[in-house]
Length: 259
Image (tube, one colour):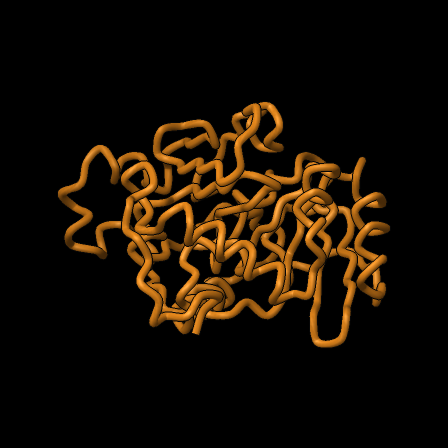
């Protein structure tokens, strides 16, 4: 069961002809995410005030909200606003620990993540991930495309909407080899989302139907440089407002899926 009852009938409007979900379903699943983690009605305002974003499995559960329930909430924020965000969350949550990241936790080159703040409220867990650069930049070094998404106070970003909307997950090699992440470790990460309904592959050509989808296959190729502003990304504003209010409507954040 996902954030929304799988028996519900979502309206397939095709956001930007990519995702088979409607504005009503997206907004409803964000609201359910807040309820799921026992967060107050002002949480989206907190994201806005700190330019933070929700990422990881929770963001994926909003994009495809009838698949599974997320078990924790990862909130990414830059170093300038980390203390502000943590203090605001401490009004509802209790601080458990603050620690540096490990390769087993986050797929970031050394030094790009400064600290991880873990907070709990009963069974609910929130990890605040303090990025040395922007809140969005760690997303592009994640282990696979299924989790290269984020949610701000009013917008949703998806880096690989064609794959994500069809429950496909392409593994990424975009990591520093010095982190000592082996092929077996990466496969475990891929298998995690296979168990959640996403078909994992390491090469695009392993999906036969993708071989005929050019230039999409060129854009999604591991050695193709992408940016957060290119036409193959999905941007969806579920709340109205000026575009410059979004924390990721700034630098292009270039990346590729290999090192």
